[in-house]
Each structure stands twice: as C-alpha cells, then as structure tokens.
Image 1 (cartoon, rainbow, N blue to C red):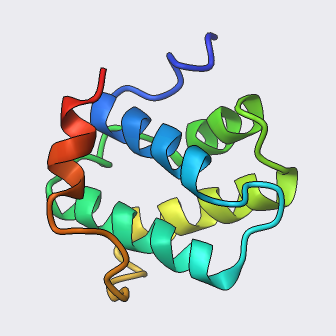
Image 2 (tube, one colour):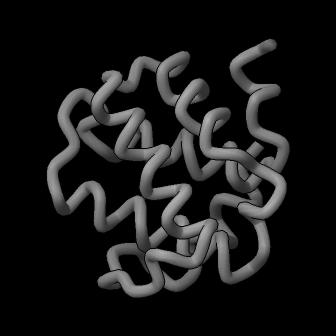
Length: 105
C-alpha cells in the first residue's frame, strides 16, 4: 500500500505532513506531543479522524521518516483522542489552522 493511501481523509494527511514539517520527528519533546494533541482534537471535533485507524497513522509516520518511538507516540495520541480518552489540550495553533490545512494540495 502506498504511504499516502494509508490515510483516507485529505485534511488528516495534510495535518500529518504539516506535523512532519514542524516537529522534531526523531525525538518528540513534550511540547511536540501537546501540539499533536491540539491538532488531533480539532480534527476529532469535526469528525475528520473517524475513518482513520491508529495502525495506519503509525505506518504512515514510519514511511515518512518518523523514528519508531515518535511514530508510536503519534499512534498512541491518535488513539487516545479518537477513543475520547484525551479531551483537553493547550492551544498551540492559530484558530484557522484547519482551514489552512484543508486548502493545501
């Protein structure tokens, strides 16, 4: 399976690409984890994560040069947010971040 076919929703894919560009994917800092939570909660609130699965998030990250440890943390955060176990985050991104990511091609 192509690495981009692992992710069904284009805004989720754009968000993962954005995170890859913005974070230290070799060794996530706790602030990086909070940024992921913030973005995933926004996506979850809009129902954009429901068709994705945590294993594909992990595989996408590995295929896009995330370290195994960082990819596992990304997967765990995704699962926590998608399952409703992570509900609170500090605000790290501008309010219009999803509009910007939705328009990326």
